[in-house]
Length: 304
Image (cartoon, rainbow, N blue to C red; front, side, top):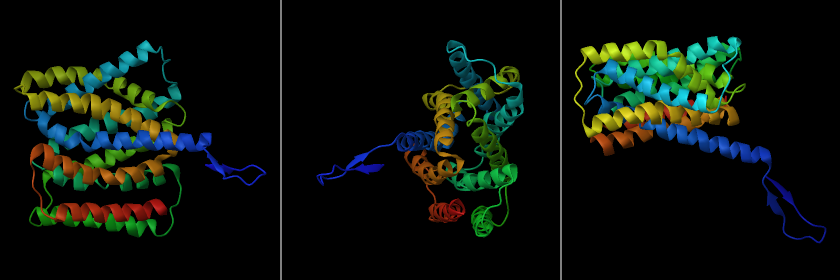
């Protein structure tokens, strides 16, 4: 914003600059992405009512890829340059396949509230991954805050599980790592190509794996369609896997990975709300308190 006034001393008029408009647009896009992501775990829990975990992950990838491929063809988007293929492969492995598979496996035995608190470390993990990828050295207070956030989540998971980490927790921590790598590469690529093309091509690249994977999973895992199950599948495929990532990467390209990650601080708390409203889950005060503690720690890292 900049102020303008006439020589007669009239009241200054605020004028919106193109840069401010771009920041506002990017913030809105990233916020829509966070809202879409906050529904992912409850939708996955719904999907598991009708589909096995491998079927749910493979079919959601195929459906999202068909929509993305249709958009790429309709708009006659040229193939990505060869130099971008390694980065797209990282996005595909981390965001399209790795994170959905590991979190879906975890949600077979973990509540969505518990998973939301653990995955609340994602902005922090992404920041660490980005620092390692780019070689940037964060300020000194970054690392103590990062370790404090990680310690809060580990204490929460160990305390909830009677002093030990479960297989579901291992899946969730693995999901953090692969998704952080995918976000880092996706944010980098979104600076040189439209964000929706990043996730679009990543989804299409996975088709040689997702199509036979879906066929194989459907032949082994039983399917019992319900309204919840089908609704959950459609949301994770079209809402989270495609549209959510489209607006998320567009937002990151407009305002940067750092500012977009700040918006993602609200995701765990939003997921807790959806878990209570859509799934009827109950949780102790430790879940929201840990989520807030992680939020504070990540806020410190962002300011670093």
